[in-house]
Amino acid sequence: MRKIISAMQVTLDGFIEGPNGELDWVETWDDPYDDLYSQIDTCILGRGMYPGYQQYWCAILADPNGILPFTGKVASKHEVEYAHFADKTPHIVLSKTLDKVDWQTTRIVRDIDEIRKLKQQSGKDIYAVGGATLVSSLMNLGLIDEIRLVVHPLILGGGKALFKDVAERHALTLLESRPLKSGKVSLNYSVPNVRYEKT
Image 1 (tube, rainbow, N blue to C red):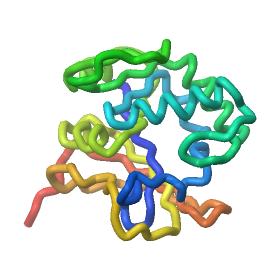
Image 2 (image 1 turned 90 degrees about the horizontal axis):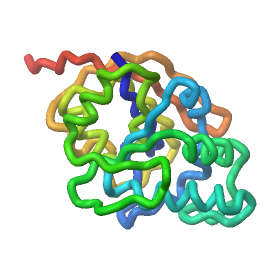
Image 3 (image 1 turned 135 degrees about the vertical axis):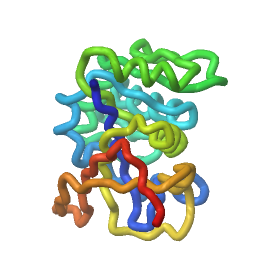
């Protein structure tokens, strides 16, 4: 069975956005997921994340040397590579309300059971890009197999928590812990299907 892998950037206090949706603390979106791309052939996103995701990566495709939305910077080499990867990789947006998507590689699914069926099909692993609501929903149904986090040495003090909607405890198994030159830490965990039992 294919794995679903969630890979997210998060602050030390567990937030993926500031109180007003701020993302200015993320210098680049390419660190350090490049080893993931050869492992996956499908990406899934939630309704809330998709518009900004499309805007960001399509902006790079339109002008690799232009100033980007959200960061106000020029794309890095790895971001340009990911934009081209995303442009040819099937994307699924899980949403009951989204009417249409403009990116040619993207389609909408209405029911999370379609994600379960997708996981049972043959193919490479699936990348759960985000956001927090999608990741929590997949966790609650036991569909996430691995979590990869890039932890920034930053405390926001508030904002959107990555796991705020996870319904119960999960005991994770550490696969890798790696300090990065930037001062961030890369953490990879497997997510066993067995839930944590309170004693």
